[in-house]
Length: 133
Image (cartoon, rainbow, N blue to C red; front, side, top):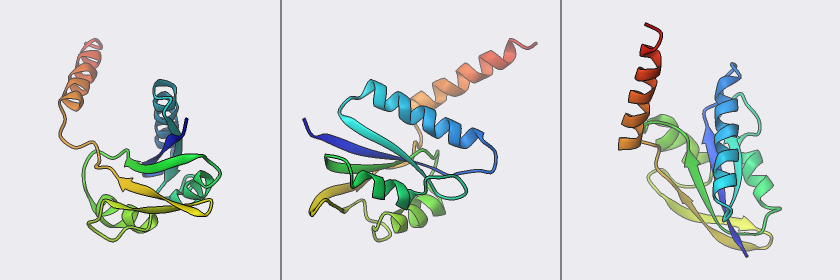
């Protein structure tokens, strides 16, 4: 069975927490979704870079690649930097990815954005913090 590729993109940081969060999330996605080959890449500081992760996908048997930013909201990285790194013109969500002599579809997902699950998570975190009182 041919799988889809998912490149989970994080910002990167000199502190270890961002990289740990992105990599742990990627492992959870892969464990729960066997139809995806999941790799992580970072905008800056951490490795692998987005381009290094794209290169690693060239060794995989995938029939499409989706780039998913693990960012909360749109900003310059979402609108300009990441599209530039993955070879998409600004404002575009679809392109192609050269893979082993063929071309597969490449799509770019939105950041998390406004979502009821995010609100639930914030309430969960607030309740946890309130246990400290």
